[in-house]
Image (cartoon, one colour):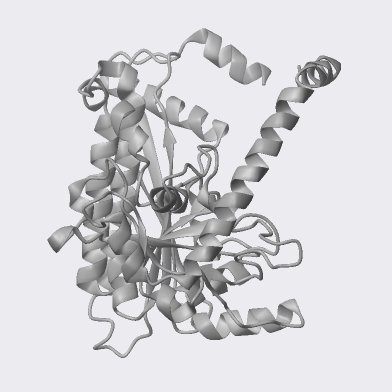
Length: 405
């Protein structure tokens, strides 16, 4: 039970620390946003040369910056009603296959006598045909005691094994979709688009603490990005609340002055730069120019010939208020001239999903594992163990807690 009065008193005691931090934070964000806005007057090639990319591990804007003369690419559409926006979205999606996969996991716990875990990945494939047909299915993988205990560090790192397995299965499922839709052009189909729920690029700090997971994640994502390029089917890594600092790091590299270690990219894009001026992104549907992504500690596998990045990103304003979503996108999509079509698909999915891609939302709902599901998992495991005569027990304390709650 939370004692509300004690919480209020504790916050009041630290009021000065909160207010001073907020003032410094706001100043850092405003200064960073001004620097980002000023980049619109520069040529992409000059920025790239100044930071020394790709030899330095700093993200850099594509030639979209030259065409837009701004870090913002305007959507340029406005609707008088939600019905109008839905009609536009349905036109974008009609006859086009979109696909999303998402997963959940059942972690090993101390209440069981043998470490065992599970991963459930669900997917949603929608051809957007007039008959309303779609495919929604799931795959379940059991992670055995042997797999968990073989992890570097033993059972203490079992969570990394489970998360790695989840990523692998999610990528397997999306790759299977890409293979099914291979040769879509020759069949006269509209460009398919697949969604990966999360980032393609983990922060470099994760590499030092979770090396096993970092290496596994990078390997799987590179596999996905390369197959996306081979099949010419875009895959979008969708991050609803991103704390990435690629743009902030670019500004730091150009100015040789820190933009503020607490500042992240999404903040820079939703602050009012001038008292009478617009936000950097502003209206719904606006996005940033495509930016090639490089980071310190990023696996060399994410680079192609000559060190060119395989992945880039845009930030897209998908709601009327709040920070923009980040879209991690394979670089070949921009280079093939497909970026506008792909971002329109994301916008359309967000219109249908009321601010969040409907395909991902549906896959997530199908994949989620509840506490009741965990109870069922343990019950089935126990029945399986009894039938095959090996030891597997659930602690009485855990059973008692389940009954009480």
